[in-house]
Every structure is written in C-alpha cells, then in structure tokens.
Figure 1 (cartoon, rainbow, N blue to C red):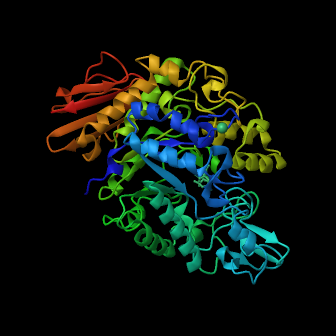
Figure 2: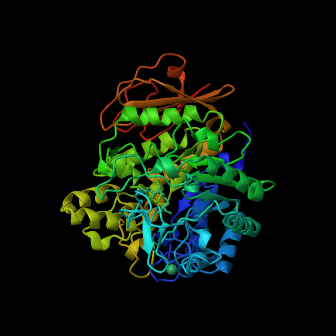
Figure 3: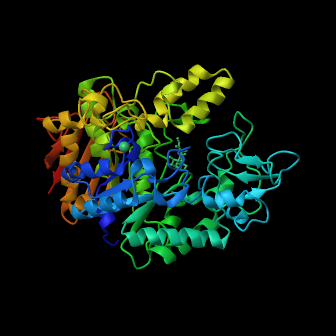
Length: 554
Ligand code: ISL
Ligand code: CA
C-alpha cells in the first residue's frame, strides 16, 4: 500500500452556486470561494472538490456543459479561476474539479453540429439511432425523464440521454470523442489542478447493440437498463486509455462517481497499480433508505444494515482505498437523514456522532459544505421553491398520476435541493451568503445554525469537526491503519478498531436515540478517551443516545 497526498487529507466539497456570493447577484461565485479559503484552512481541510464551474445553460445546474474550457459567466472568468487555484495552492491545499463527460449540454458546439444532419462530421459524437416500430430505439428509462431517447424530426432519428434531454450522451466508441476529452483533461492539468471527480464515469461505455433492459418497467413503462450501460467491459478500456494519456507522470488523482457499483466489482476499477481510478463514490450507503421503487420510495434505514454496508466496503477495498461521505449535492442532509434534527441538543450530538463514525474509517473523507455546522433539510413550502430538475420532473409526473401529496413528502425528505440551499455564514440577511435574494431560498434556521455562531461556541459541531480533523491529520494510524469491526451483533452500537504497529484505536458509536449497553473486556477497557461528543464519560460504560467515543489503546 503506497502513501499518497489524497489518502492523507480531508476533502471539502463546494457547491459554488450556494457557497458564497461576492457581488450581490444572489449566486455564489469564484471570488466568494476565495474569500472563504482561510475558513477551510482553519478547519483543517487539505483539498477542495468544486462542483462544475463550466459554461452551462444550467438545465441540471452545471452538469450540462456547453463549453468545457470556459467558466460559467455567473461564477466569474478564467482569470478568477486561476486566482482561486493559486490562492488554494498558496495555503497548501489542493483543488480538484468535476469532469462531466458521459454527456454534454445539447448547447455544446459538438451537439449543435451533430444534430444538423446524418452527414455532419460531428454526428457520431453522440448516440443516434432510428426508431423502432414508430417509437424509441429501445425501452431504456432516463434518470430524469420517462424515456432515455429524444426524437429529432430534422433527421428522423433519436438521440440517447441517460439524464435530461438537454444532456445528450457522448459516444465514447468514437476515437475522436476520446481524443477531444483527453486533450481537454490534459489542458486542465496543465493549468495546475490536482485531479478530477468524474461524474457517472462508469456509464460511459454502452453495450453494443443497445439491447432492451430486462428489469421491471417504471410507472411510465420504461426500464432502468443499468445492466446495459453501467460497468461495461469497454468502460475499463476507456478508463485505462484515459489514465495513460492524461494521468501518467503527473501527481494528480481521480475519484469516480460510480452508481451501480457493488463491493464485488469495485476492485476492478481500483487496481493496486492505479490503472483506472484512485477512489470511487459508491452508492450502497446512499441507497440504504430506498425501497423497491427507488429513492423516492423511502424505507427506514436500520443500524445493522448500515454497519454491514460500511464494514463490507472496508473489507472489500482492503487492498485499495475507500472514499468516505455522508452527503453531497445530490443527497439530503445527513443530520436529518441519519441523526436527529428536531431537538437542538440531539442535533448537535448526533451530527458529531456521524462525523466521528465517518471520518475515522479507513479512506478519504469528503465533507459536503454545511455538514460541518450540522445544516438540516429545508422545509420547502411548495414546488415553486424547488430548483432541481430531478425533483421537479418527479413531482410533475407523480402529480399527473394523482400522487402529488406522496411525492411532496418524498421530496422533503430526499430531494436534492435540501443540500443546495445557501451556506449559512452568519445571522445577517440571507445568512451572510449574499447581499440580495439568493437563487434558492435560505433555510429559515440560519439565525441559530451558522458558521459565525459555531466558531464562537467551543462545543459546536464545527469546533468538533475541527478537532476531529486535527486528530486524523496527526495520526498515521487513523489514516493508514487497519480496520476491524467488533461487537458485530450489537443492535445499536457500531464499534470498530483502527491500528498501525503498536497504536490502536477503538471507535464506539451509538447509532440510535436510545441508551446502548456496553461491556468491554481487556485490553479495550483500559483505553483512554481522546475525543467524545459528551463530557465526563468513562471508556467502559453504556452509551447515551447518539454518543460517540474515540478511545486510544496503547
Ligand atoms: O442524484 C441522484 C439520486 O438522486 C443520482 O441518481 C444521480 O443522478 C447520479 O448519482 C448521477 O449524479 C451525477 O450526475 C448527474 C447530476 O445530475 C448529479 O448532480 C451528479 O452528481 C448528471 O450529470
Ligand atoms: Ca455572484
């Protein structure tokens, strides 16, 4: 196992639109980020992941890219970007960007050309097919619309879009597409960035012939055909080519966002020689509360399931490396989802518990903006307050079936806008995010939940994160140490050991809102509590609701 900077540092994910607005137009921007870098440094952050900042019509908030080498006008200019990168490096931090190359915007010059006709040189940059029996070329569903195909009357053909119809899928089979993408990646590396988070990168290879999917159809009659578009053999070939052409000889990293990846196949992407990806974002934990009909079909998560998922991944990636996260811009707020957000004392305690659990596992932690102050889900009052295409489309379709009330309930719990409201900096107007009304509403709890208040309170979630990050940063045993779960059958407690050479740690986590019994034997019982979310506790006594203890043994 080799050491690497990206294994050692804690990452912080910035959703630029909602982080900090420097010019009062209600939209976060690059200069806003620059003004908050000292905050991130103070927190102990080692690297930043920026959600897309490229030119985009924002059908999917920047995940529909019109120009890969232009900065979105609302966010600033390429010069602002270069100043941001220099300011990050000056503080000894690193910066990685989002790479969205499964699809582009339909307004990208390549697609504008491609749709001009069958003879256009860019036609094969995308996936065009004739219809079948007067309908779509196959039965695939899209993530955001019923069908994954859009009809183009001009050429009487259909194009594939796994996401919205404004996000046509690029045709990776075409070597010219790969050349374009590799050139673009290399130019970004030449600008000095330290890596990429690769959006749905395991979907780039589609099964030849694009056969119909075999799963049960969704309510609109289409089929999530991941067996034909996720984790295809070709994808590994493309990733190896990308690695050779863009990564070799550079000190850069990549983390792939990989839905539908299981513990069994994850190691295929994470070879010890680093021939494809360095880390991946797995979704098994994010799906823990999804029922048979997907994310909107919400089922309660169970502690034993959470334990088995986390331990399963720790064991499956023993020879490679995990990414660790509770949340991102697509997920609800962790304290609302996995902790307790309706009682102030327990909000604080459970947010600290979740932080302890995740940051001390083996892998690289990714903190999503606002998580470090325990931001909660937002009580949106009606769909007009939403901005996210996924929630809006889902609501529209469900309402058409007469299921609006149920859909709204799901959106409040799982909608992506929960994570996209403005960062809460202080108790002034608009949470100190902007001088004018933000592009999306502010969570009304900002007068109490904000960075300024949290910095002033020694017992805040924020100061706890800072202590926890400092603890991890200063102990190689918490970074590179082995992982082993103990008390596996305990119905409430998640307990694991980390260890390197003679240094051993025991992490004790009460996942529940009820007291949990504990009886440790030697040598565990002789340990010393190094960090806890409750004062004055003993190593070997029952855990109070949501209590977390970090115990050092030897
Ligand atoms: O957001 C999801 C569940 O609510 C996922 O299905 C998500 O669409 C999937 O993980 C892919 O996410 C990424 O690519 C999308 C973009 O909308 C997401 O924001 C991005 O993280 C398309 O580019
Ligand atoms: Ca702005």
